[in-house]
Image (cartoon, rainbow, N blue to C red; front, side):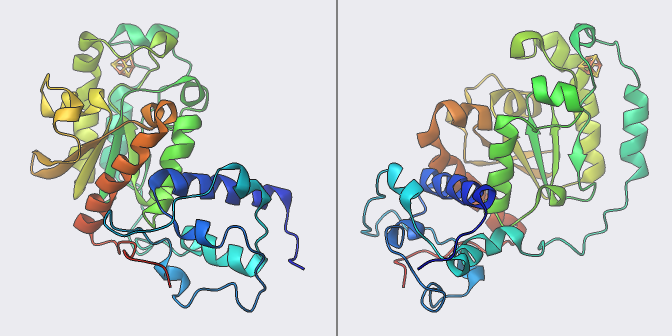
Length: 290
Ligand code: SF4
């Protein structure tokens, strides 16, 4: 009989399984409906090989209905294998995380900013968060209600999804840098208006200049259009390598859009795998599971 593990962990695993399902990752489904013992739970490949992603050509069984995931009985050993990549030591752990004075200086320059009308409704300025020497910078649109309360970027539902995507890449949030085009929450979560973007975006550009990442990932149209100075729709260049001031730039969908359109998660995952390859992160293996 399989051992029990805490409900909170079970919930976390179920969320993670659903997330991988949305990304089109299928290994977990293969073993989902069987109870496995500690001895035979571990696939031949090591934990670092998980999660695999299959080529579009591969003929794999379709994922089972979501309701079946809740009934899955999986041993703690199998669980340990599943979440090992999440808990693994960061690939960028050797990167110096000392705060960069120049980022602090930009924050000081922003001060208690009233340069645009967004200051009127904000609680907290959401400057940015993460590794000042990150190889990857994620740029979103602007803070939402949760971010406005906490003063941190991407901490609401969309932020949780972004965190899952970062972890699926084999990273932790603290390995990357996350910020937005505007630092104050637009009312009713409307998109920032052109004058607000024009006023605030120079701070974003200074942040990116200081961090000097290898790759900028624009999350959504506002970030992409701001940095690329284009009016083209994001679907016209999403997933393509572009350039901003000598940095490679990839535009993909915003996590808030993915919450409304879960099928688009697999497209974003393809984009993120290109980013992983660019910064030298190991890609999930393709092909049929063992
Ligand atoms: S959005 Fe930017 S420019 Fe506008 S008030 Fe906030 S910090 Fe200042």
